[in-house]
Image 1: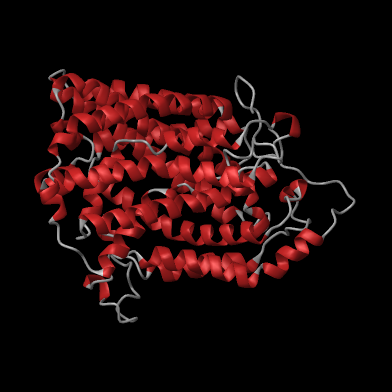
Image 2: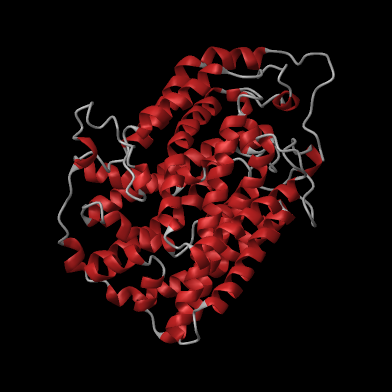
Length: 488
């Protein structure tokens, strides 16, 4: 386990003396980062696909559990290599070939941490407005300062502080969320929920892919960052199990409860679509609004903290040579600037911004397929020093994995549509030529591009990289000075 104070370890391999703990410690960061009451709102988002309650439950359980299982597989790489996710990705893409995917990972994590801080700031304003305490500019400024300070300071401090903070968030947010569920349970009307009409297979697939993307697939590029401090002797089954369980438990419970609420009231479902967190406060007595705000904000902070920590590591892996804590600070400045712009000057920008982040989800899905297959093919621990040496067994640039990501992205973008912004209307260009009904057909919102990109990366790597992985694992370390990452 990392010591107290600011974590000085960057993207280099964690030394043996700093590794400790048990796989069950992984429950805290993964549960805390996914316990946000925003998960309740996903019930309304899912029903918007035109599915029944039971179809939504099946899509949710399968989509959420499978997507976090992908995180569990990649978390195994952290135990085997004791390095951040995007450094371990060098084994698949080559030391320098991996820079592209590291840059994509950085964009995605910085983007989502910004969205989470925006939502936390606006949620505080909404609750204060309902209480009559004023939810204007002053409230937003204070909320932004508090939320940003906690997020940035935790990211700068590093692993030990992140893990402790997530343990606190887990307990507080979980208790308050359970109270919220108890207080709003009388708004559930099973007769109305059970009468929701069933949707087509395309609608169910669309809901499933949406939930995969909104939950586990949004974390795959950070999955090994929190298992890298575990000793090599740690149980592989435990690493996989606690990562999957910790990530999936909260979202599954919150989603099902959200389905019951949104399915009971079309008005509530519509309100959630317009104001995902604020709409949930309409079900509460006034006395619980402040605890609700605490639960909502803490849950969002839990996700933002993991994002800012991992975004700093991705920035370093992409080639920026500064200390880890400064990288987290740089990302924090970008996050705050983005939040200020959206909250105070350009709220209409959030839709286009989310569309941009979803668009990045396609190449990340392709990268995930490559990485999961690469981890599954390996039988030995990583040759640690050679993850930083382009002359070593992992090479400088590996062409096949990069081709798989590019091909998966090109095909994937052609099979998805994105309604968040008009400038993304070019997506879905393969839906017509492939006889899938075009951009307005039944398959338009099924999210096939995400699944196809994932499968292209997965199957292509299993077939095309098996022999390469065997050669890598059979190689002996060259007798020469090893090039290691600078430790600024």
